[in-house]
Length: 453
Figure (cartoon, rainbow, N blue to C red):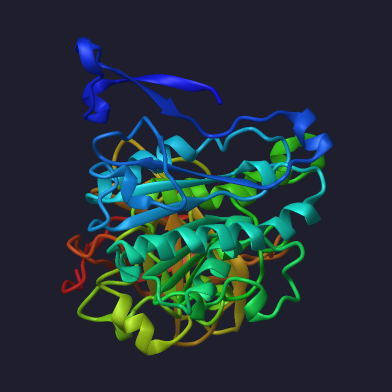
């Protein structure tokens, strides 16, 4: 087993004679030859804390307290559980996830290294090994409990196949552990599984799930007390759409769940989920109030769920949707747009909105469907922009109706109102009584909504 060297001030330990180094226990690093030959299951538990966020310490399965004081059983404990490893290499995200979790609060972070068992070209072998790894981890947590740890302070974070492994551990412990977070639970071999054969809400006191690849390597459906669906839960912006992109075509959507969660932990992006019956209803702007959660805001993806937990447990299984950009920090600027039109004839069209702040602009196309515009019709849209420009000095609107021949029809816009959803402290922007021509941009300066001037 290869070890690295870490500074003594990181581990809080020094060797005798003044040496300030300690050997670290690293995640198992395998290669393709191991995968070709197949690996037998072997589970290692690597401990990290705020005092040693970069230097792992392998724990004894039978005597967790042997690692005290570093492994303090009175602290909460988060377990990170990876998934299938077809190449045998360590997950690229594992070190950053450890460090970000250690920054959330004073807790034990334990990496469940079952790379020997997950690294197989035969995916079915890895699936079978999740059950055996789950029994191994269950026994360790039981030993923790017997030595004074609280099951309610245990949080399992499972990625892909690791999400189901976490569910099996939770089921073994009768759903008494505090929380399971599933990051795009694996779909292959689980699409027809019963709740006992996959992650489900009964596996912990609270289960939250993030979906990013439901149409391929991820699992469709709802499997937690709250399920977040990024961009509908399937195709992610910026990910390749053709097989000619190589490996990225297969893993990009699936891995996005981890990178979104890392971004949320790092507090560089605040990803608000809007509870809704479907993604299409969310895009139509029908689910932007979050009335059931008031006075708390809409639920946000991430580590701290204390503000929403009781409400979610009372509501039962909740689906929440949000959209992202293709790159960091992933967050979109969202506005609820309310329009009242007055036109003589029924028209159908998509809406294009551009926001200007003097130097730059950002544009969105609300064209997932055609909207109905007729005499005195109120239309609500969800407009999401890749950039958050503030203050907005000018707004451009175009209603595109696909009419390329003949005269352009006019539409009278009695009122348009843009309400910032992510920044409630910002003013609502309005404009009144504008004559538009279809397929033509109309630009105007926004006014306070209590003014008709």
